Image (cartoon, rainbow, N blue to C red):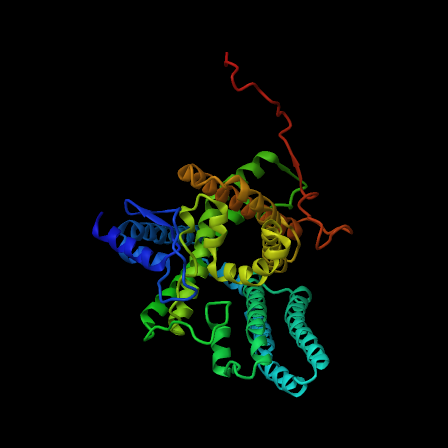
Length: 474
């Protein structure tokens, strides 16, 4: 085992929960119990710093970005006589950033209003603590107050996005923030309710509350492991990575989506061969976008905020890419959200409803939340992700349950599903988007009825017929 492999192995052991190590390779198997919060780095931080192999893969993605940049510059210069470098797509995606910031400030104000409401509830509890009947009524009123706050946050955000359409990227950001604030409010309400009933336990200070609102976690604790200083060079690096990935996706959109789908719906008919070719052409950029999105949000973005807030626990995800079981993948992909779903949905339901129903409920709620983000962002309901995540993703749990016996085979199957699934997403959503944009309007147009199913008509070639592939050519 080489020097880098030894350091990588030690780092994985220190983190815990990443699996066993055999011959310097992380494998699924024995797992040590993870502490709730501890000072530890993200897996990719450790791998990039200590493994020349992973650092080379990182450099490959950087080179792909540079090649896409050169492709965009040269093509626009030759085709239009000007240099674009993807700025048009980025500006279009964040076109309504001003209105989106205003909406985000509203969401923040709703979240902050929970704090005085918490103290009001605690003060009222002290006044009625000697009357059991009033205590019960007050508890119900407190619960209804939290629910009302959640409803205002979610309903008003959705109402604004539905009636005043925002650009795609701006809507994604605002909707994700809506869910983040909603989950944080629910968690801190649950954490602080016992303190309102027990005067010996103090309520969080306002600084603790504000820190929690921006900390890269959805579970409230009075204290988290903290680092000693802010490494501003790390913060700048991670935000540069976020900006680079934004342009990365704009290049992918301009080179792989627009050429195949931008004219979809302008003609009444389209040949099936063109559709099939376009769908397969979107598989590779779809996976690259999937990986870039993971790196952007769960690594670069969260690590940047963790560094600025000296938040010590950077284990926002685990080594999901080596998984051979979908159950392991779903736990490792996003530990931040997984911890919240486990704490507030799975654990409360499991004792009475059973593990199977609790798992199903978690999947459905998560799938609906993802679909809400896409529906509001695109401006139509087209539940492709809902079916992939909430149906096929759920079916993959038992189908890959024996993945530990054949880890290589099932890891291959897992990556095959990623390629196919992302190719479908990168095809069907643009098809529907441009069909609604290019097809003539009709009375049957609806937010919930797909336009691409009726316009354009997908036809075979006029002279097409099935031929026996094994028949010898004379």
